[in-house]
Length: 450
Ligand SMILES: Cc1cc2nc3c(=O)[nH]c(=O)nc-3n(C[C@H](O)[C@H](O)[C@H](O)COP(=O)(O)O)c2cc1C
Image (cartoon, rainbow, N blue to C red; front, side, top):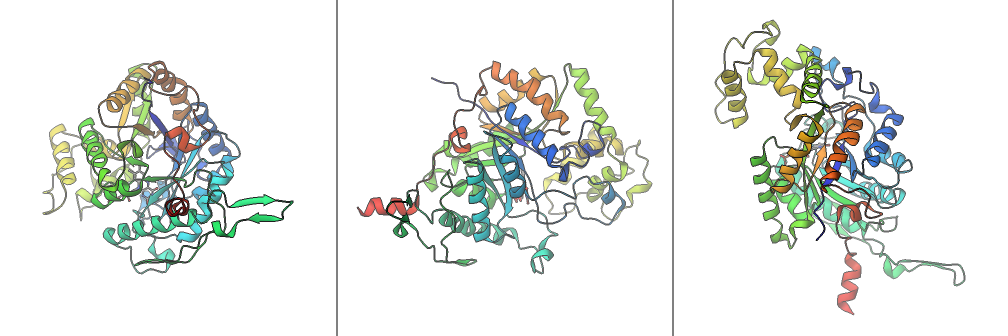
């Protein structure tokens, strides 16, 4: 029996995932709009035999604010993902491209067309990270008066996905005859209008591009609330998620895989990929020194911005950073346990203000592993072999530096253990991920009728 292999994605955050990455000498400082940077990063990920590269996105400026820390944010200017990946698909051969796009703010016909084009341009390597958009500040860009509530956003997301998949099936796979002798270009019986009229959307179709090479681009999802999990169970083929302990990740894995049967799906049809942000050193001391260096680059105003919500109505700028907080607030009634956890942690560990914000801001709630390539491989193996992950979304803290280190040092260690591929298995992203190619709904209907 062949050994089960990890799926690996590189989650590309322009200068890197650490909140202060853009200040680090190992980052490309203008990377949000530097195409050469992205070419380098995608080619490095392909050298490491990654399944895919992924960019997050929001249709508006991320991290809006009017305080002093706003000017210190490195993530305010970046490429539109599908445009970016279309360019990179001609600079690579194997790696898949996951682009984020919003079901709340985009148009389904245009989105279906864009992703079908990307799948053709990349010869079957496109994926769509379906988000309902978490940022609350972008609605004004789309003629709305407020950000729709999560229930409504997720309800629309189900319908939106249905419409987009329907549009991708407009042409059957064998619709194009292209016979110069007979003069027949395509078979109109194999082109189908959608004529969708639902609660949120009205779209006639058909789409003006033939079926994508993968049938449908791979569907990815990244929400983990109750409606987020249902959307993933019903429609997603990969799910990105953020946990910091094995137990939490195992519980999520069991929960989501357990929801698939009611949609007539098998567990292997949805890949669960938690994030890991690796800080790599040839020795443990070297790795810890790297992490400390990164943490020291967090400007106090950025750091204080990450803890301010735990001390509402308080001006933190006058606090002594190297002393514990002057007091610990009672968590507001009815609020989630995150407040409790943070305040209890600060109290128990006797953290200074700086230590507390470094702890929270540096990792941004993600799983950070600081250590040697062997230690990082050990942790990944433990999650992979103990029901917590089918693979990982690798989140390099500094780009391009940390991705180079991961490819040069951690990938060979995973390969040596038989946990990761040494060559791409297939031509398309679906083939590499081991996912089925969806059958066209009209072809299924015709086969049933025959
Ligand atoms: C790894 C990861 C990547 C994400 N990327 C995006 C993104 O690019 N754009 C976005 O609006 N939300 C993104 N999200 C947020 C989720 O899509 C979702 O909105 C958020 O988790 C809140 O939804 P929930 O209430 O279902 O958990 C991401 C979440 C995770 C864990």
